[in-house]
Length: 126
Image (cartoon, rainbow, N blue to C red; front, side, top):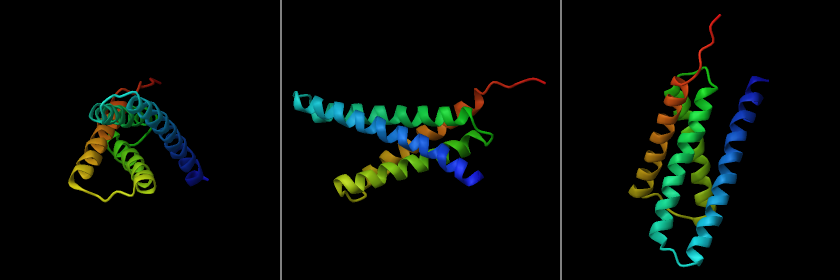
């Protein structure tokens, strides 16, 4: 029962992540169609992904009893695995140093989000 509950919680975050990624891809695709440079759209996508990883881990960190770094690592690894699978299915790319650096930056923003989310929890007094 506990495992199913945890899967549902992470499923909610993964579903939200996929929906936001699809929306961002659609909007940035429209930017490319109207003539915005692909360098600029890639940079916007990168910055949005960093903030998305940070925000989702921050929210998850506020609602956890684990340490913030552990929460951020778990959440970041799950989101990176999801992003990696989507990338493999849609683009069939091979891993390179730049891709690993990209995932490492996303993981570090997720860890920072988890830590800050845990540290900003409101403590209830009894």
